[in-house]
Every structure is written in C-alpha cells, then in structure tokens.
Length: 323
Ligand code: PBG
Image (cartoon, rainbow, N blue to C red):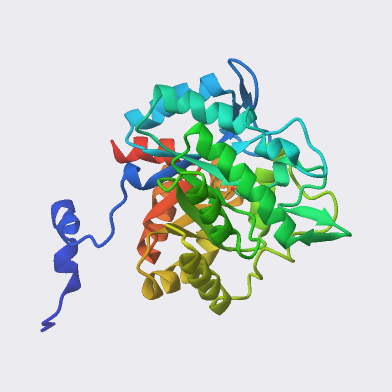
C-alpha cells in the first residue's frame, strides 16, 4: 500500500509511545479519601469496601506516611460518627472526630494537603446531607450549620474544606465565614456537579450514613443532566470555589470534559466507592486484570480533563506507577 499516513509509526515501541503520550498519570494528582473513627490503634475493615478501613487518628498518621512515601500528597477525610442527632451537632464539635484527626495528621505531616468533607449525613439520624425540617431538606438552615462545621475544621488546621452537600449558596457562605474568622488561606474544593448516584452505595456502608427515609434527589443532580452541571459549576466559581468537582467520575466523563472546555479553574473528579467496588469485585472473580483496570480508568478520568482524582486506589495506583 502507498500510504502517506501510517499512525502505527508512532506506536512502534514504548519509548516512541511515551514521546507522543498526551495524558500523564502521577501520584501527585491523586487524593486519598479516608474514613476516620474515634479510637486508638484502630484499623477496622469496611465490609462494603474490601481493602478500605476506618482509621483512628494515630493510624491516620501512619497511613499518611505511607501515602507520602509513594508520592500522594493529599487526603480527604470523612468522619464516622457514633453520635448522631437531628441537628447533626457532632459535625461542628471542635473536639469532634475530624478536627482531632486534622490536628493529629498536621502535626506529623504538616506538608500534606489535608481536605475534609463538609456535609451532615454521617452526623444526623436521618442520614441526609442537610437538616430535615418538616420533611424537607432545608437549604438555608443547613448552610449555617455547614459554616460552623467548616470553621471547626479550619481552626484545626485543614488546608481545604470540601462541601459535598449540594445546598444552594453554601460555597459563598463558607467563604464569608472563613474570611470573617481570619481563614483566608483555607481553600474550598466544591462538589459542584454531584449527581444522585447509585454508585455511592458502598460509601454509605462505610459511614453508616444511608438516608433512613427517601433519597437525595431533591439536592443531588439528576444523572440525565449535563447543562445543569455547567450552571452549578459556574455558580460555585462565582461564589469563590478554588477547585470544582464532578462526581461520580467514570459514568460522567462527558461532564468532566464539558467542564474542562468551559472553565479554567482546576477540576477534581471523584472515582467513587461503587466504581472502586466494581473493579475490586470483577478482579476478585478473575474477570479483569485489577492493576490494568485501575490505571486505565484513572487515565480515562485524566484524559477527560480532570486535574486531580479522589480515588480509593490512590496508594495502590501510586505503587503501580512506581514499578
Ligand atoms: C455525602 C458523601 C457521599 C459521598 C461523598 N460524600 C455519599 C452521598 O452523597 O450519599 C460518596 C463517595 C463515594 O461513594 O465514594 N456527603
């Protein structure tokens, strides 16, 4: 054949392929979500998420050390709360599980980027991300509590707060609250386009936080919508978000790509618990190659346009990349 273009020339061997590779995957782009519970020396396996644990603050510091050694520079902390009430009062306790963990890990690893989840679901009896008033998740009342929670975390030394609740106006309100208290340096990683997804199931088992009644569709987005994601992201940027997030990641790569094309701020994507579970389960049954599936799916999320990825595979993937 007389061909001018032979794309295979650029695939002949690995060193050539590397020269023309368009997307990189680095441990520094990963954020490890971690589940924190009160206690000492606690590393409790999570039934719904094989390979993931609930850690006490001292174990968190050890895990942070392991992450730093493989090049992962950020953790995102979720609190397991034994105390749950209607007002989610444990969420803003300055001595609560998360502020204590932040202080502990910042003491041992001051350079680690420590992020904390801001939402009420692990701390409330009903399992919703906001306060339930007369059967509805009440927006403005919730935002006040979220601000108190963000302040408690800021006082403990967090780098970024990450509101995952999807209330309207919470990014601006949290920014005001932080600035008003002298925490101008604390960043906001906003869960901007967070969908009402079945892929959060395993996570809710980790925190015992599934809604007791109903679902989260009155605040999390309809999986059918893409334009609406761009609107949510635009609002969060206007309100002062430093980084915006699309969640879940793998079933929403088009949303990540659309956000990348439209906005210049850093974009995070959350490779959520159900996405983790699908790879773990399929690999356990011998249906796919675990290592290859991890790296290929993380690469896909980066190729779609995410700068950073929250992933339960953070440590494992960093290890794979170092081989
Ligand atoms: C709750 C929250 C959820 C996740 C992160 N923050 C669950 C939910 O919205 O019900 C899901 C993360 C995952 O599935 O890995 N504020």
